[in-house]
Image (tube, rainbow, N blue to C red; front, side, top):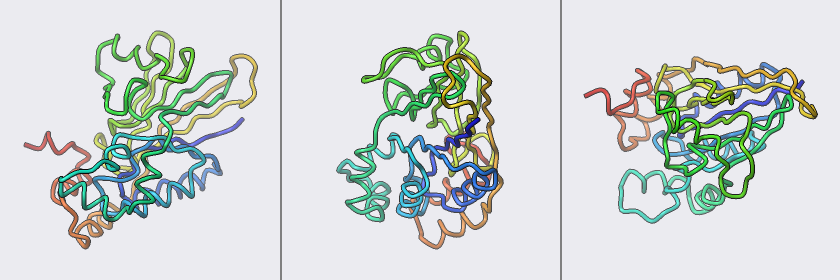
Length: 241
C-alpha cells in the first residue's frame, strides 16, 4: 500500500505549511502533491513557493498562481509580485493544469478548482449537475476518473456523486471551515490491475495562528485585518459583515 499527501492553498502562510509538513513526515509519508495557490493572501509568498518546490513531487497551477503573473495596477497584487520576483512568477505561470494518480485500481484526477478552469468554483452544496461535471475530462485528458480531488474553496469535504468520489483537501494556509490547517491522504496499491482497497483521509492540523498573525503584522502586508480575521475565525471575510 502507498500513501500520498495532497495539499493545496498554502497562500504564503509558513507556520501552517511547516505544521502540515511536520505531520506528513511524522506519518512516514514521502510523496506530496500540491494543488496550487502557493502564494497570495499571506505574508510569505516567496518562502511558500520555495518550500513547495522542494517538498512536493508534483505541483499544479491555481488561480492565484496564474493571475499573479499578469501585469496589474492593484497594490495588493503588486506587493506579492515584488516579493516573489520574476523567476518564481515564471515558475507559477508555467505549472501544469492537472495531475493524475493511480491507486487501488482507481484513476484519481487532481485539479485546482475544476476541470474546466482554475476560476470555476464548485461547492459541495452546488447542483448535482455542477458536481457531476467535476468528472468531465479537461483538455489533454481522456475518460472520467474514479475520484476527483481539488482545492480552491478552502473547505475540506468528501462525497460520492453518481458512484464517483469527489473530495476537497481544504486549505493549508487559509482554511475557511475551521481554523486549522487541512490536507488529505490517499492510500492504495499503486499497481493494482483491478479495484482494490482504497482510503481517503481528511486531516486537520492545529498550528500557531498567533505566529502567523505576528508575521503578517511585522511585514505590514496589505489586507492585513481581513486576512488575520480569517485565520483566527476560519470564516470568509465576506461573511463577517
